[in-house]
Every structure is written in structure tokens, then in C-alpha cells.
Image: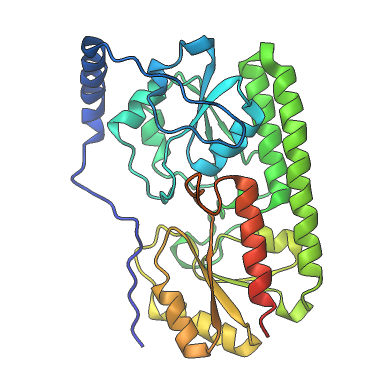
Length: 335
């Protein structure tokens, strides 16, 4: 059996040299100044991720702090804490695969105008150090500080931390607390608002935690498997008593090997796992091969590295978690 699957993430090695970014950035900023363009700020309503309008040209709007995050899930978390007191934007767009992202000149321009950058860390944003080098004076914070990492145990990632800590609601509470502290330090005048928003948002995440615990409790212990394309559920599995099975550890891989797929096939057969899943940002072809070989059902996609558009199924982190829980439980109940 030979299976080769191309992920949707591709790297353009001939894109733009990092050394050329400063010159390009200067040109862009000069062109904007000549054109007299006047960018209007986006709404900063809770749970609504603004588009990628250039933050550096908006910084003077109502003198709000500008916060960039490395991907949309973190932007939604930060927006819930910030409310309308700060401008929050994601560097990567909705639907993007964050592991191998290639920053653009416009990303660099926005970074120059940021007051704070929030990242996940745990080896998720492997492109970020080069990005940060363009504006070393901009403060940044790793939101997984205080979380006990789970290390990957196989393939070329062995010994490296699994980066998907936000996929456990219990960890998400730590993210929110780190965001609250960072915004309060950055903008002390509005700290009481950040504190109040964080409290409300944390209560909403705690409700997701309870829902997940109750939903899993009705599944027989020997059937509590979560089978996906990427190993993005290690923290969820640890915190809620699930057993994780996946094809590859991290989405940065370019293809699924026959060995990886065969391992999943054997596990699904041996444990009579009724349903398998994939993630929204990658191809599901390898997982469909598992379905063909085992007779399991394909239960659809999980949302992990990116939110959906506002009119989609998972436009916020809370909706992402609710959708994933419902999808998982529905799949595990198929006997």
C-alpha cells in the first residue's frame, strides 16, 4: 500500500528574501504617505476578529494599543479580553496553516506599528523569530507560559513539545490569564476592563470544560478514542481521559507515509474505533484510506489551527470547541 498525500501548506522558496523586507517596507510606507490613504479602524467587538488592515496606520485612532497575535484563535481570545479598549489583529488569516506560514511585507508593516505581539510558543511558529527580528523593540509574550508541555515521542519531532495546548479548555484558562496580565501591564488605565472581560470569558470557557467532561462520561472508557490526521489533541486527551491516535505529529509534514497510515489502520481495527476525523486545514485523503481499509466512518473535520470566517461554523474559539466536542461525541456514539 502506497499513500502519498500533499498538505495544503506549501513553501515558496523564491518568494522574497528576508533581507529585502526592510527596503520593501520603507517603500510601502513612503507610498502610503504620498497617496494620502486614510485607513479606518475596524470594530473591536468581542469575539470578532478584525481583518488585516495595517495596524501601524491605525495606531493613532483613539490612542488604542495595537496587539498582534500569530494566529486567529489567539486573536479571538485576546479580543474577548480586550473588548473595545485595544485593537487586536491576527498575523495569519482565517483558514491559514500556522506551522509553516511565510510572513508578507504587509505583515512586517503591521508589526512595526504593534505595541504587543502574542504568540503560542512550544515550537508552533517556527517562522516567528525571523519576523520578530524586524522590530526587536516590540514587546512579545508567549501565552503557553505556565502550561506543562507534552513532548512528541516519534518521528523527526521526537522530544519537541506538542504546540496545541489551546485545544484543552483547561489550558485555555491559562492563556486568558496570561493575556489579562499582559494587557493590564501594557495599558494600566484600562486594566479594570481587561480584568472584568477576562473573568466573564473564563466562565464561558469553564462551561465548555464542564460540557466536555459530561459528554465524554457517557462514552465507555474503552471507546474513548480520538483519531485525527494531526496529533493536535494530546492536551485534550490528557485532561479528559481520551486516547489519541493520529497519522502525523504536526501538520508541517508534506506527506503521509505508508507506515504512518498503516499504524492508524491497525489501531482502528484492533480497537474497533467507529469513526475517524481530520483537520480543516489539511487534505483528508490519507484518513479516507483508513476508512476504506477498516470500515470505520469518516466523521468530518476538527478545527484546530484556524477559526472559520464569521459566517462559518467556528468563527470563535468557544464555537470551535463546541463544534469539535459535538463532532467527536457524535462520531464515538456510532456503534
